Image 1 (cartoon, one colour):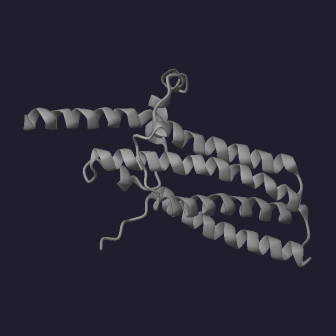
Image 2 (tube, rainbow, N blue to C red):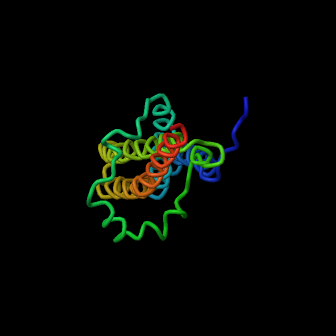
Image 3 (tube, rainbow, N blue to C red):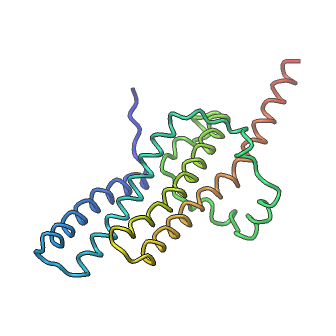
Length: 192
């Protein structure tokens, strides 16, 4: 079985999770065992814990959705009429190639069929919609540590972060779907 190499963004996320685990554990230990009880220590622990929370839940849910049956033709994944004009306003074409990809091999045109790529695009979109919901859950930490504005900002920034990936998938998928249709048409003509 071939072991795939982790992408740069994947290495970054896993490394950040390890680092954030250590930082939050040290800071919370210092603060809650009253070794060094300062606001800076507490908030360093909280911020590092929130990064760990967001990253680990995203990876966990991404692994869960690998078990889902994804149908790229489902109505949820169809581009809506307003989207083309929205994507022009957002200038998606200019920045879409700069967006990080956690599993670039899933979108590799040399080693994947167009159907596999369309499915991977739909799965990636679903993952990021789930991440949007996960982002909102970070607000509940206000009951543990207070300071609603900080957790609200965390949730909004995480939502905006995931929105870019949803936009890119929804922008690119119609092109792949048109290519699939052309491929099917050629096969019909060839077999006739």
